[in-house]
Image (cartoon, rainbow, N blue to C red):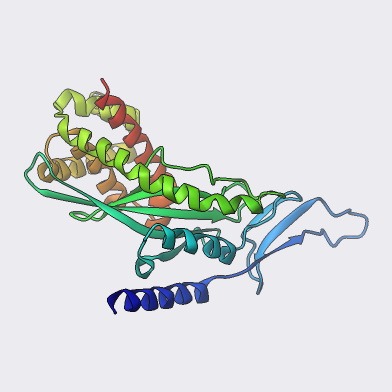
Length: 294
């Protein structure tokens, strides 16, 4: 009975998501001036009009959101992923969309003796701006502080540019959902490795130099904006290392605390998952994993 209830509520959630989706259309752009020929340029619009979501060339074929969802759902069911917790998100004024579903939590006791829980999600995203590819990847969200980020090095072969002849490739999503779930073990191993490596003040300085391009030694020469950023990141580092330990894991969460809660951002979700906050998180991840191998 519980299984039947779960399936029923999962289907209801999928139907609710479907109701939020929009169709897109590709329309050639015209100068509407006599003597001026039309370029091979097209706008991608929502079916009911409004602002263009992107401007692109003739070979771009936008992927319909419902097409992605219809291909994703059977894969999630096969992988026993709970459809009740599937969510739909849009970014950059609907220029990018994403479907997200939880896989499993990563749990351990960190160096600060705190029960550390990080939820892992599989994401399928696409965009209509002409350069965002359709991709499947993992993201994580740490419960103690709700720091979220796209996990680096987790994009899978389902990624394809929205060009003619690529629609059939979405059928490979199921294979890559399986790869994503299998990849959680590697992600967990990496996070626990970060938690095991202690750091000193010199390591923090080295980390900040890798991530920001400057550290404490450069502070006097920094402009006001960079000083403010440096000060706020240092506060986040202090907070996170107090509850995570003086480890690579604590340093990484110092950056994600800054991007998720402190940095100036007109739209936090855009900043963290598709804008400069995502890039900062990615650089920080690469830096700590590089340091873990030293």
